[in-house]
Structures are given as C-alpha cells and as structure tokens.
Length: 156
Image 1 (cartoon, rainbow, N blue to C red):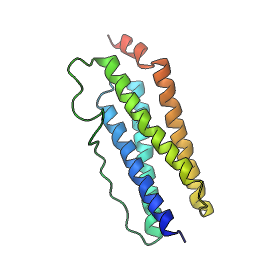
Image 2 (cartoon, rainbow, N blue to C red):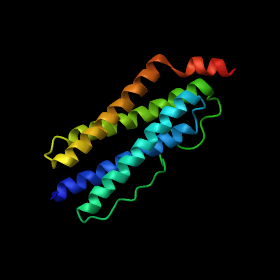
Image 3 (cartoon, helix red, strand yellow):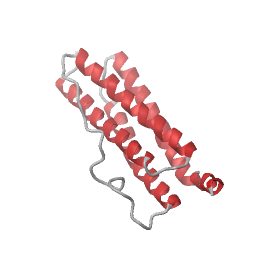
C-alpha cells in the first residue's frame, strides 16, 4: 500500500506531466517543420499516456483520478507570438519553452525515485524517467544543432 505522501507525489507528477503535454500541444501550434512536429507530438502522447497510467495507479489504491487541465495558461507559449516573430525565432522560442518544462518533469521523476516504491511502480516510474531524459536530450540536441534551419530552407 502506498503512503499518503506517495499518493500526493503521484498526483503532483500527474500535474507536471499534464503541463508538459500542454506545452507540447502549444508548441505544435508554432512549429511548422514536419520532422520537429512528429517528435513533439510523440512526446505529447507519451505525457498523456503517463497521465493515464498514473491515474490508474491512484484508482487501484482507492484514490480518485486527477483531472488536470491540458491548457497552457501562462508563459511564452500563451497567446499569439509577437507580430515580428518569424519562423526560425518562433520555433526556437517554442522549443526552448518546452525544454524548460521537460527538464522540470525529468528532475521531478528523478526526485520521486529517491523514495522507496513497490517494485512494479518503481519500474514504471523509472521507465517514465527514461522517456523524460530522451525528450530532454532530443530537445537539447534540436536546439544546439538548430534542426529547423535546414528544414525551413527546404520549405522556401
């Protein structure tokens, strides 16, 4: 059986995964490069899957599932981009915002795993952490190599 603190931690990570899914959805509205969109959408779907799996865990322990908002309400991905923001700058800004969210979720999963969890749940949390690290690594590489520049040049 999970402790109240552990159940609270699972609720918190659900909210963070929801924030990450929302940030990916918002970034998808600003990124027109197909290869980048595919990765952002895949990452968004992984976060949504985390929500489902962790909510199912809460329910197995007699807790109500969390229904977080999947809407970005503040930050650089809210509203329309500034009028002067063109393709490359808009893409870089969107990826930078998503990267910050991914790092927060990754760090939170790592901190969560400092606690002792039942083996099945620990394996699940470690799997989620590995996915978060993959997201953060890809985003770091995309920003460092500016992967959108060749794709935008090909579109023009």
